[in-house]
Length: 477
Image (tube, rainbow, N blue to C red; front, top):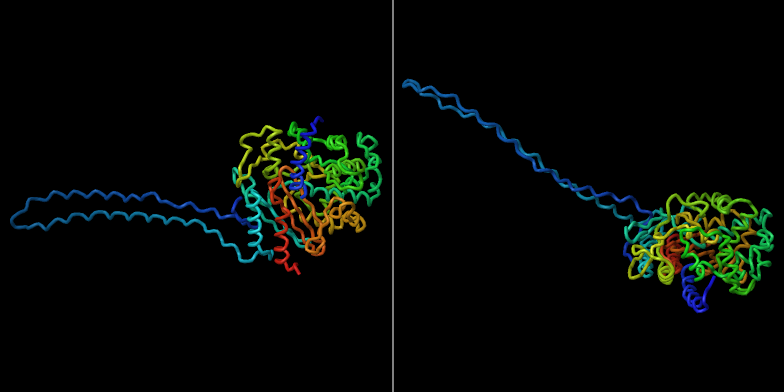
């Protein structure tokens, strides 16, 4: 792939900012939990004017005989007119239905007013059209919320019932599938990948013979992050309607060469988990989405989570929007239809759904491709650690930091106000996701916005929401 040094340097400087904002990681409408059906206002009833019936014609009197002198005729009485029918009363207009007031307390016990306010403030600050949130304590059904719109033109509301892409939150799911295969003896974290994919999988990459699954899932293989590399953007922009294969992603990554010191330097790269997906297929003989479903999704009872392109949701994901540097990248590298450009709360956006979805559905795969409902995310993420999918020994491998003290194998390791938390962010054109699980509290929060990259990021929204949720449920002490 031809790139001038100057162009590469410029794009790298610009897009590294997008990586920080999107991968790791306004409307005044106030959201509520999954809304109750809104009563449709009854149209005002307007009666047609009621016509009074015409009176019956009065009968002509019979001719009266000439009076005689002896008889004085009694006066002839005129027949009484038929009574006029009273008009039908005009129907009173039916008043429009008045929405029922929101209850003072939410059945979850959450401080919904504070959550709504935090969401509205963040959406306005970041210029976000739509946002969904899910919160769960223990293994209970998550409480879901939605705010704003999924489409800035039609103003279709953003609801928890719409599918979203969660990007790199896919990585810990793939990691658990790999660890379950390790427990079965089909894989080993420290065996070179050549044992599974052969000696030619890495091309000319200088460290190829020594790379292991531990390097791949811990981001110490020295790989470039292809998802935000200008060279990959150029490649992708020319073929948005053509799926990209895992093999093509590996060739791009290994041809690029190392961008960090092998084994001793952390450099986040989605390619590592894409290669892990290839290894899953090589040792099982099954498509990766089949193994991930049988090893993770089905045991957790997740019916609304899918790994494209092998499986797709029943309806497409909600509309989403690229802004900031990604707006500039898409504008310069693709032909953007006029109707795909939008200005929302002063921000310029390009609608992702105005493009073909084939490449977007395949570029992340086992490193960032899951499409799901937000209500599935807490159940899925918590289940990776508390769902009995892998042994305590495997869980310890996953959650032990290596080079990066804040990252294990496919999962972030955080200290939030003195509490251990496992987390991951996700950024994929054009959704931004953040999910956090507190094992001590058995508390999970997941948020997804339909903009990439948001500024401020979803993590800053989480910083505000976490104490609200903890205090609501008496977990803050």
